[in-house]
Picture 1: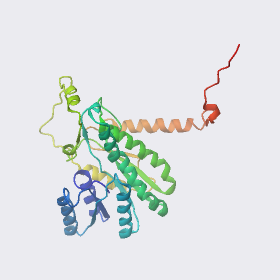
Picture 2: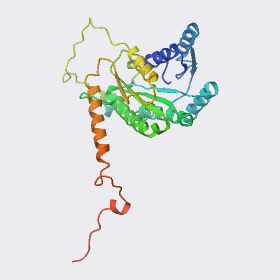
Picture 3: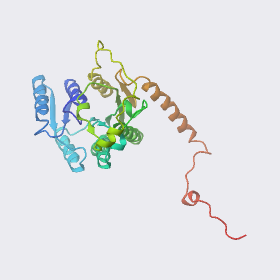
Picture 4: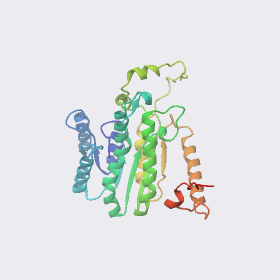
Amino acid sequence: MTGCSSGFGELIARTLARDGHHVFATMREVGSRNAGHASALRAWATELGARIDVLEPDVTSDSSVHAAADEMLRQAARIVVLVNNAGVAASGPLEAFSLEQVEALFGLNAFGPLRVSAAVLPTMRGQRSGLIVFVTSTLGRVLPRRGGLYASTKWALEGLAESLHYEVVRFGIDVAIVEPGSFPTPATSKAMQAQRAHIVAAYSDRAAQPRRVVDPARAPPDPQEVADAIKVLVDLPHGQRPLRTVAGAVFTEGVAEYNAAYERTRDHLAAVLQRPDQAMTWTPAQAAPPRRQSGP
């Protein structure tokens, strides 16, 4: 699983290892910035008698991801579950991000999970089983009159994950999407900041933003809920795992109902497309615009 240095990833790794799974926990910069996180995770596993091996793939690099997949197969022979959790938040209006920043965030948040999935899919197809989990966000489904670059990457990841779900089910592979709401995790402090400060300033008028009142007596949501939701998916038999699971009580109201309504519409459209008047494929000649007649 990816993104295990802290937050959801660390909790998911510990939860699955505690349940008896051999976990390959991946994170960047194991020898520097995340050395302490890697050491703590290894020490916890040793003390508990669990099995966690820390690897250091860069999910934006084909060679790095394939090297990590090869190492996992060398140690374990099979890959049963992949959890795509690695990602970075972003802060600032879309206009204020450089195109290089936009490409980098899509590369990490959307294309990274697809790259890691592609690296393990040959093994899962060969063994005719497996589960791939994508951790997205409720912002990847519903924009409550705000969104931004981060939400855009999660919308893209939702589409990639659902498309993969339809394609690999024939091989006995399940794809599941977990949509966390808002949780207190280190992700916010690591958010990518928009580079164009003068544009950020132009959008910084807070007067138009409604003020939200926070109840100081209310306990914040527990990020363990996300790890527990993934454990439930892992434990369910093949074919019984829901495509989408919403986790948390903040920033989630109505999202599960939205997902259910979407599924009804999806199934209706799939049925409609079986009708003779809808089941059409366009040839190049049919798709071309009609030629205009010349002369009288």
